[in-house]
Image (cartoon, rainbow, N blue to C red):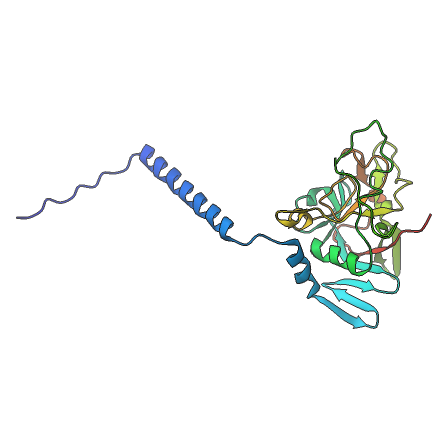
Length: 262
């Protein structure tokens, strides 16, 4: 007896859509299971991994993936480039793959965790104290947590400059020269000091590793460094100062030193 041939039905468009939707659900579930199985980043492990990159290049001078650390002066030199000359900003520096590169003046290839480690190695101490010292008491605090203090008073206060080559000359200006208050149309008088608050640590490890946020002009606890200027709680107050900023893609060096003692 010869078996009758199997007659295949041509799937209808509705059936094809249903099959496609089912496939997408299965793929998504498989992806979620893979994410659950993957080890989650650990802040301590992230720091230890970054520390493996530290090399001494001369007595008292160290390199961490391009960051130059001078022990005696506590100076950090971080390679960066100009990403935007003219734009509203919430950040002065982000990682090149960060979430906020559309709102930053500078970008860097150096990972945020490496900058955090370099600051610690140069004996800066994280603390949020100082970020909101100019906030009007009537204004709502951008974050609810109580401010933390560095073990050594003032050890979280930084001076930040930008240096670049302009023809045969080397130019060096405060980072604040790149920033202006949109209402006053001038660089802030009170941005001579920045606060090393240290990035928040969450279930993903250092938050800055995820967001790419390094130096913030608008209060952001996931960033490593925050502005201490009056009005830093506003995300609509800060814009770049194009006349003070070199051309986009210009290679610059971000220089961090201890803030002057007042």
